[in-house]
Length: 74
Image (cartoon, rainbow, N blue to C red; front, side):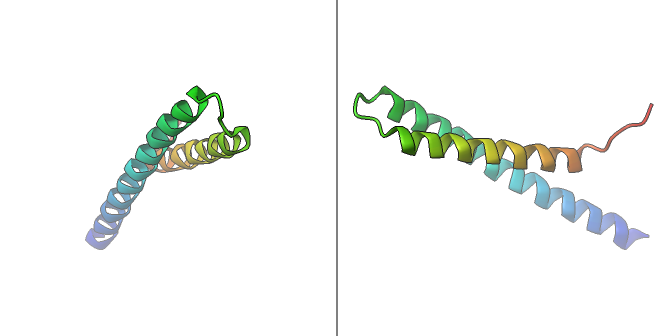
């Protein structure tokens, strides 16, 4: 029983660390996209790819958050 609790705690710590990494990358992409968009010679294809990556990160963050916060059935 104690092993299950410890495994769950380790899993949650790992998920929180991964979530922080994804959030950081998401913020970094925000800054890069903003800088590229300000340039008159911006590469729209590159910006589009970065935005797509940002959406993928947001989806990944949502799945991790769902695992960290259990559903409460009312």
